Structures are given as C-alpha cells and as structure tokens.
Image 1 (cartoon, one colour):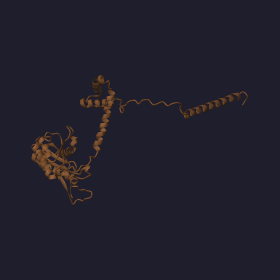
Image 2 (cartoon, helix red, strand yellow; image 1 turned 90 degrees about the horizontal axis):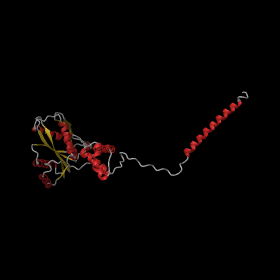
Image 3 (cartoon, helix red, strand yellow; image 1 turned 135 degrees about the horizontal axis):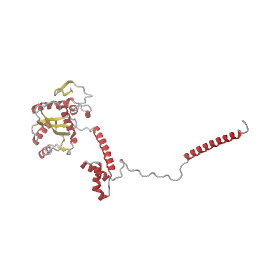
Image 4 (cartoon, helix red, strand yellow; image 1 turned 90 degrees about the vertical axis):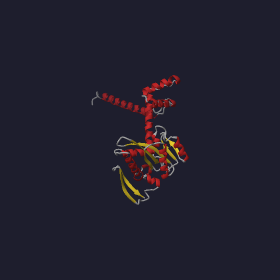
Length: 310
C-alpha cells in the first residue's frame, strides 16, 4: 500500500466507527424511552360509546318500542317514525331507525335463548292425582264428519285417565264423564282446562266446588299452559294420521286401544323411563322384575309395544 492510499483507508474506517456509534446510541435511547415511566397523571378513558348491548335510552323507551312492535308489527323504520310522532313533541325523546333495528335484533336473540331454556328444562315432578288436565279435540272420520273426544291426564304420573267420544259436548256430558273418571281413579285436588264456554260454565264451577275440586283455567291464546293434555293429544293425532276412522262406532272401539298403549306400554322420558301406569302405581321397574311380558299391537301395527306384568 503506497502513501497515497493510507489517508483514504483511515477516513473510511473512521466513518464506519462513527456510524456504528450512532446506531448503538439510537438503540440505547429507544430502550431507555421504553423503560421510562410516563410522568404526570394518566388520562382517564373517555366515555363508552352506546351500542346495541348498552343502549343509552331510558327503560320506558325500550318497553314502549317493543309494545308498539307487538301491537302493530311494523318494520324498524316505520316503528321509529311512529314512536317519534307519539312522544317527541311531548317528551323530547326520539329514536333512530338503526337503534330500533338493533333493539329488535337483541330482543329476538334473548327470546330465542329463553325459548331454548324452556324447551330443555325438565318440569318438577308433581304428586299423583293432584292436578288433572282436561281438554277436547276433534277427529274427522272417512265421511268428513268431526267427532268430539274428551280427554283427561294426570299431571304427576302422565296417566291418561279418560279418552271418551261424546256425541254432544255440554256441561252435563262433561260432568258425567268427569265423575265416571273420579269414581275410577279418585278425586283430584284441581283440574286445569282452557277457556271453552263449557269449562267456564256456572254449573260446572258450582258442582266441582261442591265436590271439593278446584278449577283452574289457562290464559286465552296460551295452550301451552295446559301442556300435558296438549302433549297427549299431539301423540294421539300423530299415530292417528294415516289411520282411517270409518264412523263413530269405529272411533269408540279405537280409543281404548290407544289409552292402553299410552298408559301401559309407552315409557315416558320425564318419568325416568317409567310408563304412566308404573308411575301411578308406584312401581320401580329397575328394582322389580316383571312376572310376565307379551307384545302389544293395535291400529294395524301403528301402536306397538311390550306389556310388562309386575
């Protein structure tokens, strides 16, 4: 290396050393700034913005909007306009279309979850012969004539107490059928019916009150409040579908077969696998072995099961 190249080499090495020093100094400043605590007071977080889950509207606004939705079945836009026309001039409170839409969506989700919880909840077991569910249904025969069927079920054991065809349904035929069932199974404490005029008749109320039987009615347009008898009729109609009923005499002969199949051969889920007859008689099928058993079939094979004799 000659004497002319030495100064350039020294300058290049000096530049590299300076660049490395600047890089290390910058890295040191960055680490120190990250470790250093902020001085002064911390700023408080700002107010939370209102969302569909945390509405800023008053409770009465939400209740009134939902009531208008139930009464008029309007869209969220028309619902917002209707609410504003009703209450803005009086209270100064208005709602927007987006807020109404989010409110309806949230309430729909809540109603869906409540419906699922109610569907999967197991009802509490009631004592036998405490509450009877009584109601009527109609069966259409091959000629298109409708026949009235009166049914009764025990809420505790799910025993089908009565399934009777009535030529006329009035207060006298109702009381006669009920007293025949009471003579066979005993007197219940209460009876649950819907709001049919026959069930709410003055004669029925007086006779049952004199007999020591309380009468309860479900609210209008709420058949699920008398759900035990409605579930019985649902099973009855399900197996009756496709089975041709010729006339009233044929129906009278077919009803006892269904009643026997429902009470004796069909296990119930909410009874722990017991049949209604086992629950009514207090028989535990898991500890008491049956003495005999045989197959049962009726309605052209639509009703099948195994009869266990304990």
